Image (cartoon, rainbow, N blue to C red; front, side):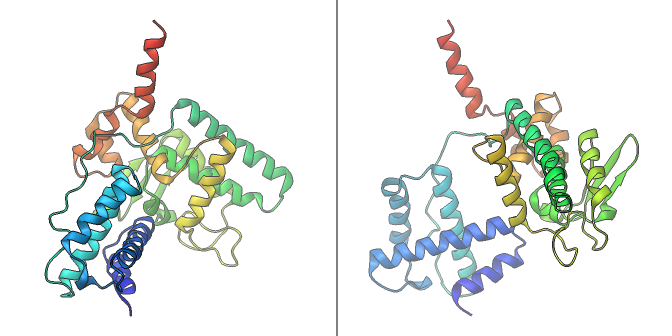
Length: 305
């Protein structure tokens, strides 16, 4: 087993999301190529020095001209690699130990404003209506896609949490409902009340969901009724983004939109934190940080005077 495969196995044991794991491995591969191009020698963990780490950070900043958050993520990936290398005795000293992240002004996550949410809702409804007319059998997949997207928008669940839901994790009655996240981030369990939109989304899906398998969200067109993959969901959201004229749509953007809607409606940060499964209010405070859109509106007010 080579180093990358060993590191992948380590990350898998750490229970990272598929997206995070893939990002870590990609960042490490890029650093390995940079190391070999600059030093003209084959990459090896024990050959990486603090100077290499310092020069790579400078390269990302001055040559690649990447944003601070992107650079910090790449450095975090390398720190994870070196942490694993020390734990396994492959190196004695961490060359990134004294490499500091780039300081930035506190930013806000991406979320959909009301106009974008309207565009997304309309694109979803149109997609289901058209697919029912054109695809008498295959439209069930589009109903699942619609229900899943609206469910995520109205619950704020992480992608992994959605994919792991079982049928018996959901309880719905005429006027209320709950979803039980059995194993959230950090192994925490939490129960989330379902609003009317979330309940409607699940009910529409359950009307047509194929029998079999224990998972709530399943692959309709597969030979066996099996759970969905995160990659499938990402493809669905990319299609909806194109249909709705959005620059981007990801599970995290849906989660952030759910949280921002709560804050804008006057819900306290403590309640938002519990719904999102945050262990610290400091994490939740990002939703009261002005977004780029908020700042844009602020400067545009000068033009109106």
